[in-house]
Length: 543
Image (cartoon, rainbow, N blue to C red; front, side, top):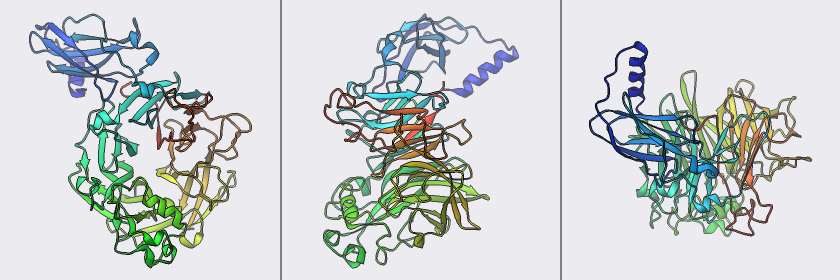
């Protein structure tokens, strides 16, 4: 949208400045739907002379028009929001000259629709009183697992209101979102195929030129990384982008360490060297901060306090690393870095990242790469903090296998998956206050994931994947939490633990008939359907 143009024209009207009467007229107009994003229509308007044009649309015949664009004689892009597959015949658009005549309502000849394999997804959406997540965005495969999508669900209407086809948007057949986040700029920052970094606006257009790490992550023999995976984060005050990367480090063989000196681990070639890559605001330059080389995590002396050979072996030959690395370089995923975020403390930038296999969070200074502190959810021998839980909060005083660590309400928010080493397997989102004078990390809020309905059984998400985001407008009281392996998303308002109420929003796949898709009988939410992350939105796009 040309907002500057819109503002200048609005000011003229407010100031009472006469606007030139239109000398142009509309000859033809056409608004075909685009393949990569069903909500975007690229309209071409042919005028008899150059003039200002606006294009509007409405969702219901006789309803209010939503004006989306101001342009001068050029092709116009409109993006529809509030998409309803059950009422798509009602969608209309019209074109008007700013100071002249316009067309009447025109039915969209190419109506918005969901791809069949996505429409077959049996989503179950429940919204209860007190919910604040008007829309929920998340990543999902389609029912045939032939394509990957970002979708936004209208929690009131209970249907998909927007989607982005990742294959079509990238031009990469079978492309998969392997990490993403919603930025404060209202864009989607995504890691694709453990190789590319994309940033999209709602209409599917690239905000920046996609970053391709093809020299390291093409899957060809000899590729050893670094390859992006799991997470990308934008820090708005500086415009910097933080991306987790992994490379194959074969300088130390697993057989040289006590934790790996038996089969099959001693047959591996090395370790994953995770790092945080920091791009400047234009993606023109970057710096790499390695867990091994820069932060002192040394596999030759310590294979990890929470690691087993079986875990490292299977993760060595599974996504997100293999087959990005050459098949001859099987490496142990011994830290499994899965989240990164940044913020300022007293005007100084700090980076926080999560090591899942260590149930550990690390904060460091990106200028010197000096580790300032380490917070571990279990095994205090590896932690600078004692983990406690506030007396007002029920639940365990530990965490493990965590995902999605972000700054929130002056402390840290995370999805606490739990692990075999924690005191229970009640997965939850938690908020911690961090006290570096007393070296205490206190759990002050705990939002447990539980099945709706008495007895509100806890959800075990210890197998991995998950996210937690404070819902906007709730002053830190509500959180949207995702359990990926269970294909479950919940907005939760009760944060003192031992929850005995239904979630405010509950999104899952309906397998009451034995499947989650009409095209894939016999599978359910515990099968291959997994969601990596979800984000709460008060509004969708411009509306």
